Length: 262
Image 1: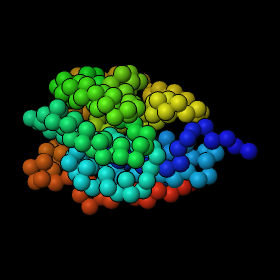
Image 2 (image 1 turned 60 degrees about the horizontal axis):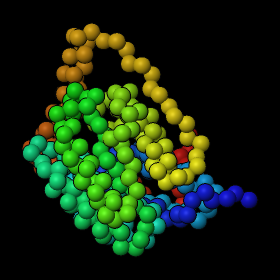
Image 3 (image 1 turned 135 degrees about the horizontal axis):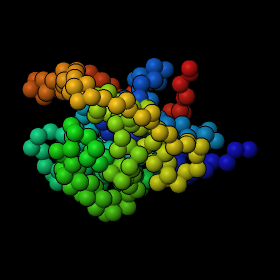
Image 4 (image 1 turned 120 degrees about the vertical axis):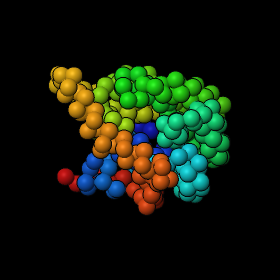
């Protein structure tokens, strides 16, 4: 007889591309991406035949959209475990106020705490290692301090990505430099399971060392990245479009976790 190693039976994940699993492609997974929350759900489902999981996260969503589109459906599923990560897309926007973003997150957490579910919140990753995002490091730090205060106020668990040095490595990120790759999502899954005190067999993994590049090669890569990823992002902002337009949640209903077939 298998013993369940945790108290939860119904897990709902809310958020944006981070929680949807963008950067961790898996063609046999719903939505075509796996991600850290699917990995967490897979572990939680082991030895728990009645365990159910839903993932309402959609790429590109801002905090107001997450609140408007995901909280009521999440509460309707009556979860006893919730992961909530939102506001990252807002922080990325020039001129945004991390204090105001975190205040909206607090409103969301206040609503999600209605039924006394265990809630896991996240700090943003330390992007000091990234030349592209180093300039918003201070905004992320301010947002993080606010989120820690929210977690303390509502008795939430914090998955601290700021101190997760393993992901401060370009080899943990996808080619768009914005989303974690499979290794990064695996590492975050280990962190979430750790803060939940759930025994698991996920082992630490390290990326292969990146090849040494000349200055010219590095600049060529930067230009290619700007054409493929930065310019489309800027154009979407100008056109008031989102990468999540017309994208639906990949797991809208709480159901037993199904492992992708390879």
